[in-house]
Image 1 (cartoon, rainbow, N blue to C red):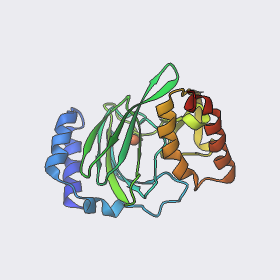
Image 2: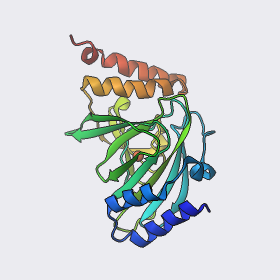
Image 3: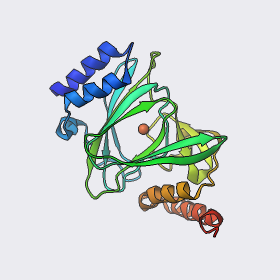
Image 4: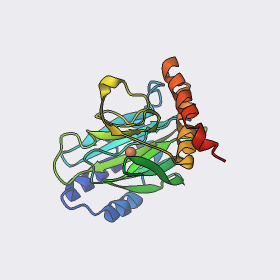
Amino acid sequence: MNLKIEKLITFLSSHKNNINPKELKSFLINLNLLEEDLQPWADFDHPLQDGYGRKLVYAEDKFEIMVMSWMPNDFSAIHNHGYTQWGAVQVFGNASHYVYKMENNHIKLVEKQSFKPKDIVLVTNEFIHQMGNQTSTPYLTLHIYGTNEPREVITADSLIFEIENNRVVKTTGGAFFQLEEKEVDVLSDLKCNDEQTILEFASTILPKSKTFKTKQKKHILNWISEKKDILFKN
Ligand SMILES: [Fe+2]
């Protein structure tokens, strides 16, 4: 295995019982990973309907390391990270990043960021976010997810916030749009009445929806037309 990835695994193994997120961030900065270090886990040929490529690099009871591959227009669904209590994401392209907040079943976009290559963002357990590639260049991202109690699969039971289906679902797979019904458990209702959130979410799902089945495409158009009173209220 690549020496820098080995160093990362050794660092995480020796710090997993008492991880300090800031220390993890400084370690990553000093490690100076390059996109080519992640190439063995690149998956740009992922199925079109998947939101992005997703490969496990390494997992222990308290942390896992993954590499995600983003083609132009690839987007994750809005999601959290299951049992994750700490972690970090390092991007190797101009990734778009959306941070959301939930309050009384209402979801709202609170921050939209445009990352630069090598930027690092720390992950916390209540972190709800969405990532995607709005550029014309494919790139990779590194994801480290950790937990304080040992878990078999740390990112199992992640929640997906399906604005377009007015519901929150639980999944053990990737944070993809339009998961099959058998891949999810429906947990609760989800409402979104915020104009900016609807517009930004539409800009992430519409380019991806070209790859959806006809029934799903119609559903997205219906969803947008249901929101017209909010989008054209003035
Ligand atoms: Fe994530």
